[in-house]
Image (cartoon, rainbow, N blue to C red; front, side):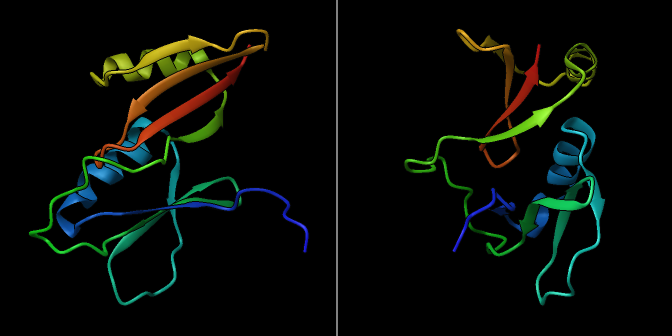
Length: 126
């Protein structure tokens, strides 16, 4: 077996969280909502080009509380383009974010949180 890369991330939420997840992953992060198999539970697949990279799955009960700790899980990192455009879009939408250059590498990171509390890193080549 040879692993060729990361295929996707799967985020579980409640059905009532779908509008916030749609706004965050679509409008804020800029992924495209696209085709999804006809599973027996609601959800959304977000695509980057030809790959569905974020799968949202409504597999939590409506009265279940979203987790406040994600254990040892750190964050989701996505390669991105358009650093200045992204800063402006996030600011215009009132999205809180932090930034950090990567020491010794030509990379710049923007960090923000999705509606479930997961940290999302957007990595830009500079």
